[in-house]
Image (cartoon, rainbow, N blue to C red; front, side, top):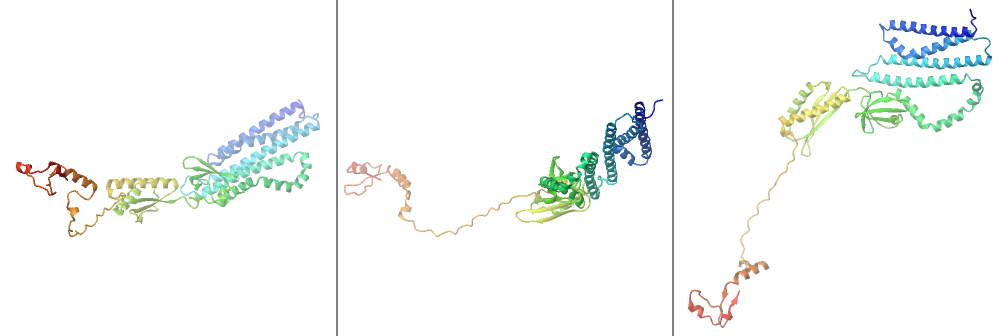
Length: 416
């Protein structure tokens, strides 16, 4: 039989340590599964801490086995190095196990607050705060673990005094260099506990409508209605105004407006609105009214007010009411459709004036303009005027040969 503090004894001790770790984890898992038949939290605990707990337990039992069975011929430097290595591994796995257990506690608290209920304002508030605390927990665990590991080195312990002495100057320099990052960090913590926004809140930012999808220590992700993601720094929600439609409750009031003709039957529209709301599950039965809000400019403005349990449902309800009322007007009340009217006014009849004496120029058939004078000349060219020697016109009968013979001189004809 070989002694315990020998290399075969060390190997056997390590093997027994692994067996003990496996048996302990199996027994604990069995106990948790038995409890999980009546409760929900054991399954959640196993899912979160199974891996870090096994590693932490394995490091501890191996450290104990190496301490008990390490051969005496191992030098002090190697012995110190092994103990230092196991110390670092135990700190790392222990911090991992502690952070996983804290996350389990946070998830256990979140399981009590459901988001799939109509009025989930308080649940969304708690979820937002817990998610921020989870990130802070992870960051704090990493920082504490790294600090504990660094303090295991003697050189860093000796330099601790000088580091603390220069911490003030380093802090000032780091603060100036990381001013925007620190501002976002503190803004993220402020958002988590000021209740300004929460997970699944309906907001309007940068003229975009969407829901709060994620809140981190430095930025906020807004899920826009068309499946885009709007990433904004945390300082945006602490320095700029924005709309939060679900800060107090998720129920919302919306409006549908129409510009209609003056002959619209508001009573008929109101009855149709009541029929529409009675046949849909989108309406929450709080408000459903129809009012005439304006009647100028040639139209009558009709406004419908309806309510729904949340913003997406309200949008669908407004579209449904608008579509159904338009269909009703086209089918049963076409006089309600907007029209443009034009009034034609005739000029008043003028009083007849007494006739006035016509001048000699106006009495002529063709007179008044140069064109008329030219037409008169063309018209009279075909009529010959015969004058005697003294210049007096002589009447000529075309059917009387004697009167044609009385013409003294054919060259004396004057044409008008």
